[in-house]
Length: 193
Image 1: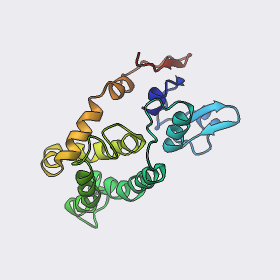
Image 2: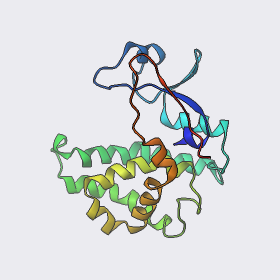
Image 3: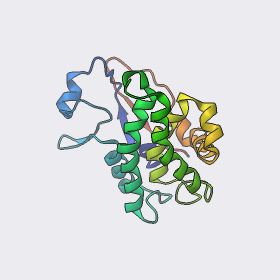
Image 4: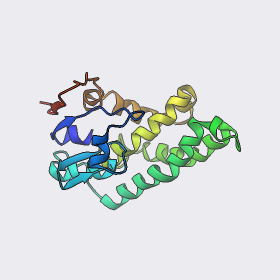
């Protein structure tokens, strides 16, 4: 979403995580996705770093507004602590030491605080979409998908926020499915105009 919003032209290459191509390891020894190759010497292989790179390239609506550090702190909290419990909630059968409800409760603290924040604004820090919204909503979306009715009943403001993002033109544009070509990468210019 950050690349699309920043109007960066990118070359998309489909990667099957079950059969990672050598080309992926050639550019990033981690072998994870996403990876953004700016040139042969500049490789970015962390989602947040890719987002920040894109916003430094072009940030027409000031996604990095207000206190950038507080946005980054919240993103790190969701990327680490929340994600830890989210994975256990989603895949509770892999973590039999506790019940699913226990893991859901561990996520509740974060989502309850988020629900309070979202009672004041349409988005987390203001009435405009920002970096923190785009960075943490995938985690919240994963949580909601486990039991959407329970999620809606317990976090009405977060639920509205999530729906606003997943129904946005920007989100829908990046969720479009592309048919990968065997011999050619797909190059897309994300421009909303």
